Amino acid sequence: MSAVEFLRPDAWLRDSGGPRYVQLRRRLEEGIETGILPPNSSLPPERELAEITDLSRVTVRKAIHELVREGLIEQRQGSGSFIREPVLRMEQSLSRLTSFTEDMARRGLETASRWLERGVFMAAQDETDALDLPDGAQVARVYRLREAGGRPMALERAALPLDLLPNPIEVTTSLYEVLGRLGHRPVRAVQKISAINLGPAEADLLGVAEGAAGLRIERISFLESGRVAELTRSLYRGDAYDFVAELRL
Image (cartoon, rainbow, N blue to C red; front, side, top):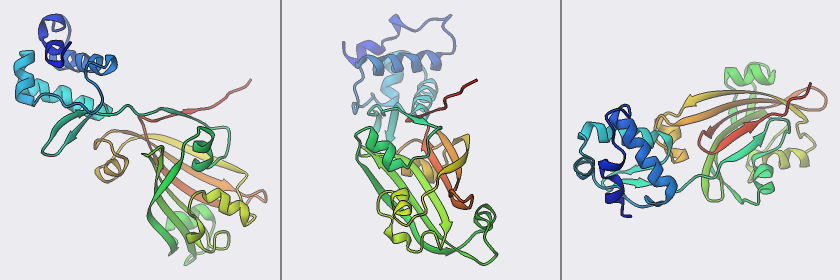
């Protein structure tokens, strides 16, 4: 069945089926799930899609916007709307203190980093407070886009006391591997997770639509001595991660 035949309204558009944009969204989702609308294929232009479905362009636009927010459709400037490649969802345990590199290696995925900031800086007030540093102290800061299997997955910004990481340029893959080599690997951490909608800059870096769902994670890690070793703030793609915690009585 062709995409045009699949989208003809006779088989799915009903007066009692709820808002029309919702019915169209569901039909497009069904087409994506069944492969009738395969990855990287283009949707008909908005005007043509309105003619095929007997819906208004406003209704069509609203349905497509919903799917863009869900990460199923990508709008390319000057080219139209395309079905996105499915994103592999990953389960991340909240009971183990591991690095992104270690997590991905266990899944057989190669990682890469796009560096956005790496060096020694004057500590911001929140870094001073979290790391228990005196006013005017410097910190080692690393900020990067983390990729796995060739796909952007997370934005990760870490700040550490300078005596624990004197040379941030040493961090090329795993931060925890470098800290372990220096004898400063954290042994426990406290994490706070919150749901957010990604802003334009973060969404662009992560390859999703502005306003798409994301997860913000703030981690404060500790050495065995109890000293604070790291403040990390990360933004994860909401369409790629499930965080899992094991609970026991």
